[in-house]
Image 1 (tube, rainbow, N blue to C red):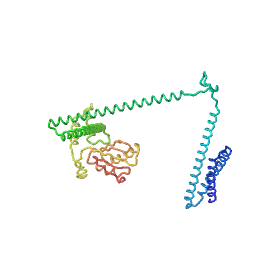
Image 2: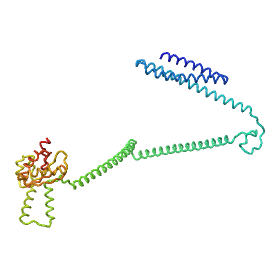
Image 3: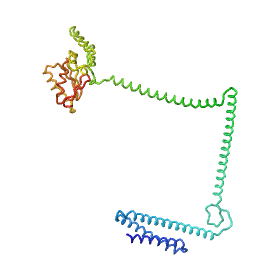
Image 4: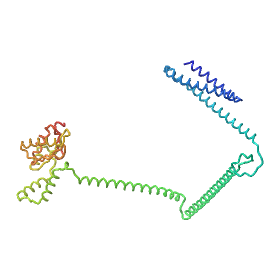
Length: 382
């Protein structure tokens, strides 16, 4: 590793010496020899740098930073010498072109001017000096100067008008102040009026923004009210209470063409008037026993939710087993499957609803029972 680094430093010094020799070379032969030597040594330097990259990765971790720094210095010197070699070569080529053009100019023979039939007749030996391009360039420069002068004159006139307007406005302000003094208005009052005008602008724009926000929130509020009204009209069957179901039943009886007999009609209206009475939620406040007494003779709905995400067919089978068990226990009920996992049990006697609830929450697939928005969870759900 150290041997390669020393060889690399020696090559760099040799390249530096060769560059000086190449720059001071006078003949073409010596220049070509120097170019060949420099290119060969730069190629060797590039190969050594690649080899050093491989060897540095094989060294210990503690030595790598120092070796990497020396490697970067070598690469920097090599790039510097490559750039210097390119600059020297370019200068020599430019110098050769200048010498060639000078020799061509010195060896050219000029003759008298004659009539030229074509602008491309350059082999006749006539003296031809192309001035059209220079004349066009001069004309364009003159027109550009003229345009710039016009723009400057316009800018000067605009500045003069601004100065005149400034003086005019100052004179108007002075006259207004003098008129205010004549009318008894002090300069302090006039300045306060000016400040008040600025504050009025802020009040105006602030009021406009506030009014816009009020309109915006009003539109949003009315939109939400409209949405809530439209949604309330489309009430879900699962959210119907006992009063809603009785109202639907009453509408159905009123629209029915077959009227009830007098004895049935009296009993029906008697039951409906009993259900219209507003009792407090005794199941929440006074216990189930008092609720049984108050709900006796009234129709009561029980919404039962099944667990385990059953299908509608499974819900029908399971609810049918519960229904038959309650019927065998002499409970007067009806059953309706209203969803895949929800069943409605209608008890003709509200006092039996809590006994039915106790039976249902003890079943395996029962999740919860809802009576008048009061939820009772089963033993499995708990």
